Image (tube, rainbow, N blue to C red; front, top):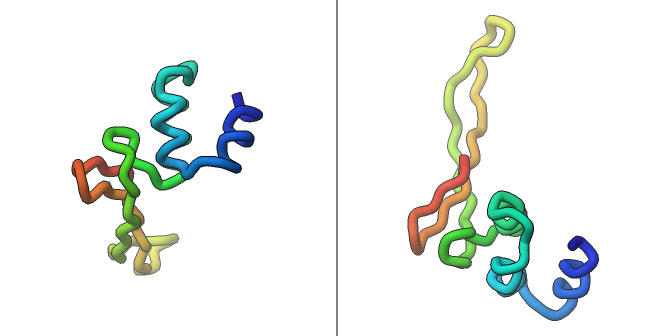
Length: 81
């Protein structure tokens, strides 16, 4: 399957590849993972936007701030934490 994706990558953008492979991918989970890895929403095929913020946390007893990143689709509201 990866060889097919490599061939398609030369001619199509990631959202078009996800749409095309939807019928042929072995499992929905694999298709979703491919889409998310390429910042494509698996629900509506629009671009996923990266949102980040800092939260206080603790590391070995020391106060630190941790960057939290989430991917979000502005069209349908799909989120990946």
